[in-house]
Each structure stands twice: as structure tokens, then as C-alpha cells.
Image (tube, rainbow, N blue to C red; front, side):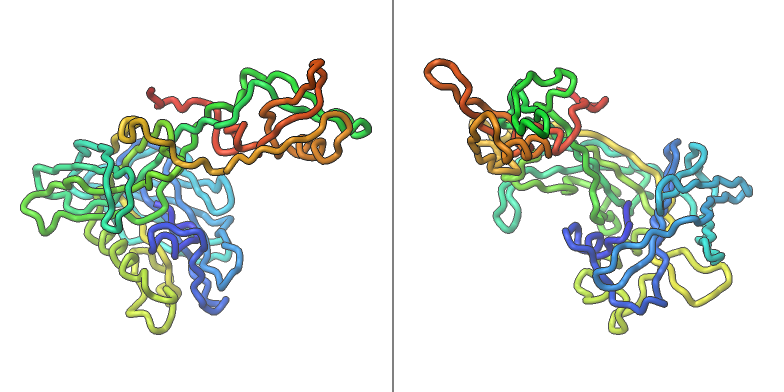
Length: 391
């Protein structure tokens, strides 16, 4: 879960422009993104402030953050980067124990969550699978689906997050690269690439940023069947080669589920904090002094299950053209020797070597280049193979 500052993106299921509630500066609200699970790990809390209009997001720094259980055991958090607080020790939420989030801001304001417990059951994902599918609007692409079952019937409320990792192969990669000479000469030359940083094959990992929830309260059993957590248009370059999705399933309390459900209901409201809205979305975090300032967010304690799936584009689109690359990769030709334009492009690392032009006697006359991204995948990702990656 990541509220960060983009409430509009969260509510609408992903977007490029941040949602900007029009509220008076004095009514800047504390935004809390806090969740712990039964995983043994260093948990994170994110604090920020709502902003007006096109103002830059504001992180909430220099706060004191801790979690305390009903045995008075405390887990302090340290700010590792502005607005991000990480627990000093690894821990996991335990059954039959309640937890409270405690926050003291730099200005001295104190906030606390209601006591929150793990849901009574942990429901395991039974399957995550990929399938070529068509959306209701006629889009062809890949659907990623999840199945889950709790035979006790006690889980009911589910939230999903995912991490997608995909292979990128630079379409115009060459074992050669251009390097810039001296400022005085304004010439470039071709040399072999460093084999440890070859830039042909890379991997990128991105996390989901939208609310994905479902519940089984109206079904005959506590079973999630063929639930679509991700759809990727066949023209999206991220599935061009090999793709992997790690799906995380969180079993929520009814209170947490209803909070996320209300966020989705507000997708059509012009301003989340406008006077015309049907009511502020109440979470479980409140000022300790019983003040009337409101907090955006919820402290969530949930159990988690995860499963990963891999697929290749060719598995579902055999003998079909790959999706278009992120760049058209138009070629440009430059004369060799003194060439300030090419020199500047190479020095600023904006182009990649593709080929060279030689005359009938074999003398070098020019270079053919493409935008850097077309010959160097490290523009889009890392050339280090992830530990979990399978071919």
C-alpha cells in the first residue's frame, strides 16, 4: 500500500497527474500510510501532508514513529529518507495481539491509531496465472489472475498488491559504443563496450499503485476465483520478452476493507475534501488530544500470502510482431572527424552507436546513431539479473 501524495491516482486506479484537493493551507492534513503484516521484516510507515493545487507534495519529516503492542512492547521507527520511516528491528504481527501506531510530529502534535489485530485467519493464494484475454472494451492483452481459498470461511476481505518485473532487450544494441575525445578536438571514436556493463539485456521492477480489493461475503464459500489483478495491453512493451508478476494477498479486517471501498466510491468527487462530499473518509488514526484535525489514512494489520508467475510473449502471441518499443529508434548519420553536434550528443550520453560508414578504401567517413535508449537498456532498467528470475 502506498498512499504517498497521489490520492487521485490511488482512488482512480493509477494516473499521471496527482490529485490536488483544494483546501485552505491551514487545513493541510496529515497523510499516513502504515501497514504491518505477519511477515518477519522491517516494516515501513510513510507520512506526508495534503497540498493545494499544483503545489509540490510535502513530506512529514522529523516525526517520532513507533508501534506498541498490548504487552507494551515498542517498535521504534527511524526516518531513512524524507517522510519514510523504517522499523529499527525486524518483527511480524502475531495472532491474538493488538497493535497501535503512535506518531508525534515535529511540531509536537500526537496521533494514535485504534488497537488493531491480525484477522483470525491466513488465507493462502492457491494459484496465480496468466491468460490472453479480451477486455469488455475490446482490448487484447494479458490478464493476470489469482485464486485463493479459506476453508474456514473467516478471511472474506482481501486486498492485492503486485510487483511486476520484465525483461528489456535493447533493439539496436551494439558491442561498440562511442566515446568523446577532448574539448579541443570535438571528435568521437568507437570502442568496445565493457562486458560487465553491456546494456543489452535489463530488468525493471515496478509496484502497483492502485487499490485492488475484493470480498467473498456474498458467495457460498470463502473462495476467490479467477480474480483479475492486472491487465496489460498487448501493445505494451513491458511484455515484449519475459514478464513476471509477484502477487501479494492481504487478508483485511472489515474496517480496513470498508476504508478502501470508500476510497473507490470517491473516484467521482471533484475534491476529496470539498464541502459537497458525502462525508470525510474516517480511518482509525486520531489526534491524541481529541482535537478536531483529521488524519487521512488507516493503520492496517494483515496477514499476507504471495505467489509469482512468469510468462513469455511468444507463449501467447506466437509468430506475432513484438509490441512497439518505447522509442521509434530513428537513425541519424553524422560525419566523423571534427563534429561539434555529434560530440555534444555523445558527451551528454544521448545517443548509442549503431554502425559506421566507410568508403571504398575502408576509410571511416561517418557514424550512424540511434537514441541512447535504443542501444542501451540501462536507460530503462538494471542489467543485474534479479535473484528470483527464472528463464
